[in-house]
Length: 148
Image 1 (cartoon, rainbow, N blue to C red):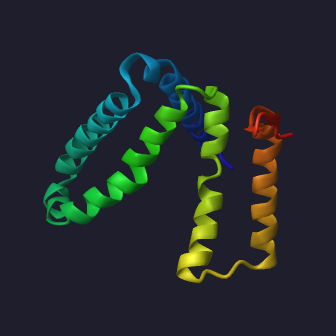
Image 2: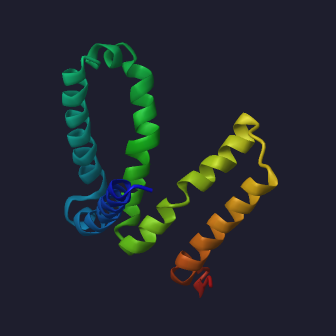
């Protein structure tokens, strides 16, 4: 991996992880739904400017309905749920739980799309869920008892 790629990856990780800290701080003050509405609106406005600059705004506008549904399901709803979780969960735990998204995506692809989960993929899922359990387990509670 090139040095530039490693730096980009570290910066992206820091920005992505910091968003959970900001959610944890801002959600109690603004409320989860308004906070995420503003966050998504700012992102949409910036994306609109970029798309207009690249001449792609018309293409996006012609497919606005499916893109709106996709945006609500894949962005607005999960962000809002993370903001609600941010009212009570620590930011670190919230971000670790977010790490399960690709794992559940693989399980969903297997269940809905018939994606074959070869032994290597199953091992990867087991390692991924095991890692999340190691990191998040001590913070989770099940019926008042510590999970791990």
